[in-house]
Image (cartoon, rainbow, N blue to C red; front, side, top):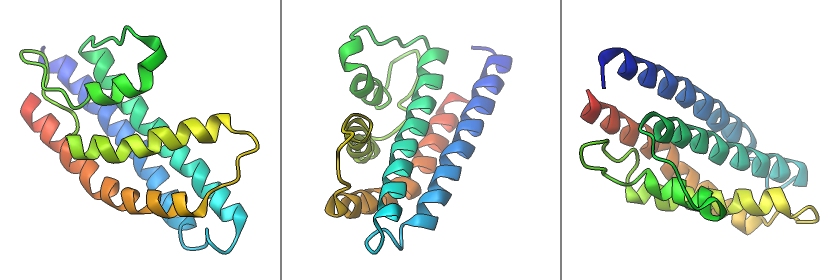
Length: 153
């Protein structure tokens, strides 16, 4: 890969990190009041949905750049997430750690339920669990991405 391609990849990753950080800010704005008001819980659920979508967009950028296609479309979302933990010899290092993958998988599963359960009531216990995972994700993801970029350069 040449320097121009690498600069484009870095710019796309940086742009997506900004999108992730915007969602993180919105989560912080809503997290304190979710237990007192169902509207905040619903808003927080929506932002959790958006957080995983923003991460998945990052994963798509990396997969597309390195031409890592997912053949089984029925398991696309979980396979894309898992693919980001792989060290693909001669192609690319892992984008994220296994630990971050595990935490993000909780958000992937929540997003699926959130998108498809129209009569679903927000489970405050699930929101509390996701907030704990969120605290880990927000501290870990930039470290993992920085490590990935360091190995590419």
